[in-house]
Image (cartoon, rainbow, N blue to C red):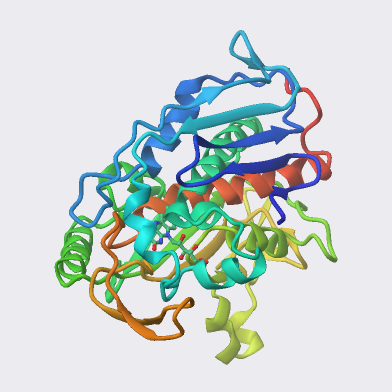
Length: 363
Ligand SMILES: Cc1cc2nc3c(=O)[nH]c(=O)nc-3n(C[C@H](O)[C@H](O)[C@H](O)COP(=O)(O)O)c2cc1C
């Protein structure tokens, strides 16, 4: 297994869905950074199942415990270990799945790779619950990036067939405060809610798209050729379960344009070099340009659905219809928004340290 990410700001994820706890160790955080449990908790609360109809009934307080690396409200430079407890795990619901792999989930390849010794309860290491650790680390990374006036945010642009109209970044920045779906348009958010509820009522699920945005970046973050900004962010985003597509700037849309259309013309804005549009998504040559970094993240529909699906019984060798009765989100997208922010922040914090934009102490 590979459970660590980053070079200087290095995070190590641990825990399983139905084990005692899930968490993260952050090594390499600069000393002297003001850090309170409330800062971590604010982001963790955004990841918790919400009250909207499509959300999993699994309800836990997810109260962060910081075990090390913070003293008197400041980081000390030592590893920061943070965790939350699993207090509402119902492993019995997964017993019937022991030999019948869920279509779309990791059950089958994990069983083969780990010789049936992996923890299968609630998806074990492959559960969305492990992303709570990503979020805790991301809250620390965001605090480090704030010292450079860098802001990371994300908003929902699509749920199933419902697409949000394009929006100003200043509006998108506060989307998470507007609705549990983190959509910046209220009418669209209501239509998205209906889409999720319809899927849930039909025993089905829906996916969607989240746009991550970073503003205030200095020019030159990234370590080409193998640790480009896009490469490192994509790697981190693909560690989030259910992420299936990542696109920077205009992404695939650039492929059918002429160079004269796709290039972002340079100009000056009060003495600062900017581009008059930003189809590159703030990255050229694997380096940040100083323009907002934009990345669209495609999330598939939740694999566990209650309507019957074809699967196989690996013990009997028979085909079996599988209907999943556990507690699952009919749509993962709203809960993934803060996870996407976190992974982008974790990577950029690491690249900022590697590039010398931040030193070992922020005091
Ligand atoms: C926040 C979050 C919550 C998730 N909740 C569920 C869930 O309730 N049921 C489920 O089947 N999958 C859930 N997933 C997705 C699965 O963990 C994921 O699809 C599975 O591990 C297979 O990995 P892959 O989709 O990346 O190939 C969740 C993912 C995230 C990020």
